[in-house]
Every structure is written in C-alpha cells, then in structure tokens.
Image (cartoon, rainbow, N blue to C red; front, top):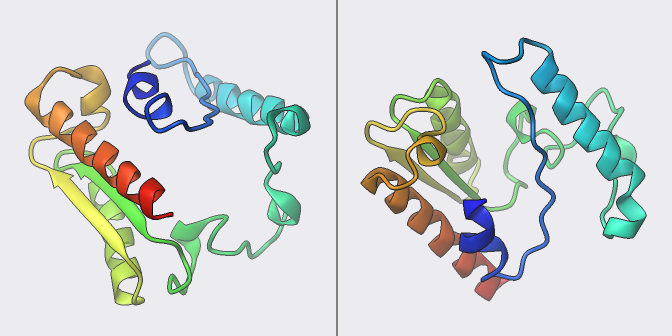
Amino acid sequence: MARVREWILPLQLAVISGEYRLAPQVRYPAPLDDCHAGLVWMVRHADELGVDPLGDVRDADDPPPYAVPGRAADLSGVPPAYIDVGSADVFRDEDVAYANAILQAGGQAELHVWSGGYHGFDGIAPEAAISRDARDARTRRLRRLLLLG
C-alpha cells in the first residue's frame, strides 16, 4: 500500500483502511456491502482500536457538518480542507463546488484540480508524473497540518 510508505509510517499516523471488491468482477451492491462490513467491524472493535465509533449522531435526521459536510447548509465551522480531484474525474464538479462553498463561508480550502486526471488516476498509474505530483502535494499538506496542529 503506497499510502503506508508515503504517509502513515513517516508521519506516524494511525489509519483504518477498508478493502472492497471492484466491478466488473462483482456487481452492485457488493462493494457497498464490503464497505459496510468494514465499518461494522471497526465499530465492534472501537475500544481496542482506540477510536470513537461515530458518537450519537449516526442516526440523526440532521447530522452536523462534521458528520456529513457535503449536506451542510452552513460550512463556516468546518475545519480546513484539502481537496484534490482530476479534471476528468466524475466527481470534479462536486469537489470544486464543495471547496467553493467552504471558501464562501469564510473557511479554508486548498483545492487542486489535476489536469487530465481521472477518478483514481494516482492509484491506477502511480508512477505517472501527475500521480507523483498529486501525492507530493498531499504529503506536503499533511506534513504542514501535523507540524502546525
């Protein structure tokens, strides 16, 4: 896992990362079921992992912006965000709109739109120049946050 070498070990982070099966080998809803199973496992093992299992807001009809920031009407209280997306990514417009909403609310958002990048480009072509640049930018941002935080 590239993130282990780039972020987790050098920055001494604790991370839980779930795996899920991908199309076309499996069909919907199998990937969602896999993600749900990983989340259920994490909640069941929260005490031994030392994590908060999502608190009392998981079943709320109107969750706070920290729980579901993309649905928040007011983003003025969200923490600084780092958002990067490829220019050809299917989520590009939503990612750009989210960063813009944070900025309009007076918050801090660092947005990178990687020219020519598609969804998952850095995982599919990890040695491409664009992938290396994107990873380097993320690592620098994490390092700044951890040193300042």
